[in-house]
Length: 218
Image (cartoon, rainbow, N blue to C red; front, top):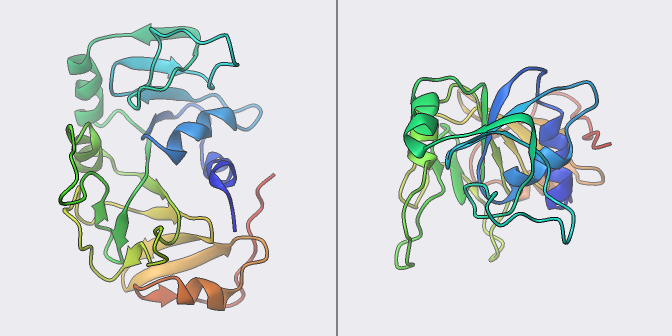
């Protein structure tokens, strides 16, 4: 099984030079630390930053520089800071090449639930609904199962939806999967994890075609 950093490293391999990328809170924020060499990425945060860098070293934090998850960040040369209205105009205008989000549930048709658990206090949905409504390329970064061992990859989401039929790819601690007509297509498996283990952890329809290679993290 992969840890959070390994999930971020695997997703970082999906980034293309020159892309504008939005990172959701949680595991996605770690991706900025693992950009491949010779790849230049403009990270955008919906609280109004373009040009985010990796997390700062200890004792080098600037409390005025935070991402959408209120974590302290760094900025790269040429970065810009602007109001949220401009930031969301960028999102709604489809100027983002890739969005990476965490999720509590994903359905086999590409629905995502990641903003609310009924009965728990939620201060707001943040920018998630704007992101899933506007983005053409969304990757989900999440654990394959929840804390109770139940699958997060379902036939149908049970939690309030953030968006419908919008997820294209999922990277979990067990596997890389594409959302295709008919279910979750298994593309790669985590080192040491068997196809049967992934099947057992996936409630939705799992499509396996031929021999499934192991992920290459480093």
